[in-house]
Image 1 (cartoon, rainbow, N blue to C red):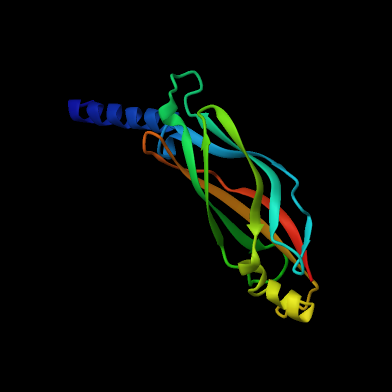
Image 2 (spheres, one colour; image 1 turned 30 degrees about the vertical axis):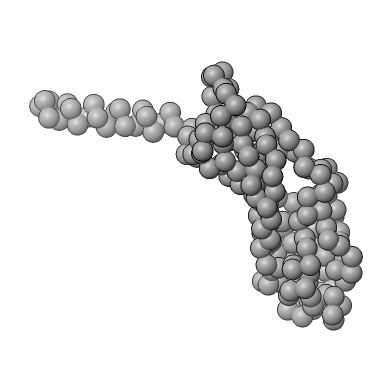
Length: 179
């Protein structure tokens, strides 16, 4: 084997070893992960006649990427906002508009914060199709159904005190919306 070929093979083996060691957590910015660890008080069914709708209690966790490593207060995450997206679980295609809200809280590294009464469905969503159809006509005019089944997806956005932008993986749940 020539010296050039041996070098190329060594470089390829090194690249594969590094790629094989890369974990899921290495792909995000910063040295911590933000996640939703628990929901409490999720409604299963909501009506367009009442609201707004919120989650009684949601726990956000800040986990160091290196569990045994050194941590500092610079890895604390200041929550800034959250986003709620909707998708249809039924045969319909129309969805309420995305909701984005500002929030403020600090999640300490390797700690949690509990958010209470966090809205996930506001008047902007209820007053637009398909939910406005339920409210005005008693049915979703696209599907002619009296129930709209929505998958709800929430993501949280923050920044470590060191300045790294952090986004949680989506947390999901399903609701049925009736008139």
